[in-house]
Length: 122
Image (cartoon, rainbow, N blue to C red; front, side, top):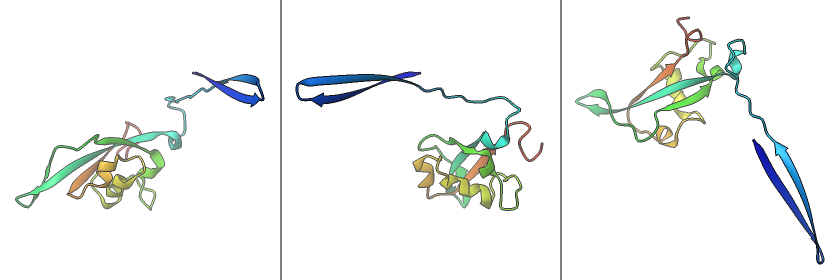
């Protein structure tokens, strides 16, 4: 990706133009030999409502999936977070969570979509 940046300096009636080209390379690694700390884990939010004293899934107000860093998916003891736990419930307030999820006032559940080989069962 190339971005051209132009700086203009005006000296009286003389205009000096200096052009710079900046090349930005963004690399995303999908190599399985990378450390887990640079991986992102997908989290799914399940909005619910109370119906006849049961928490029932309802339509979402926006996107229900978001990514969190791998290291944010562990509890205080260093164990993998489990779905629908007090620890995983806090992921709804993660910086990467959509605003509507952070503001959800009803019941909900959180599902951590562990990639094969990274989850608690592996």
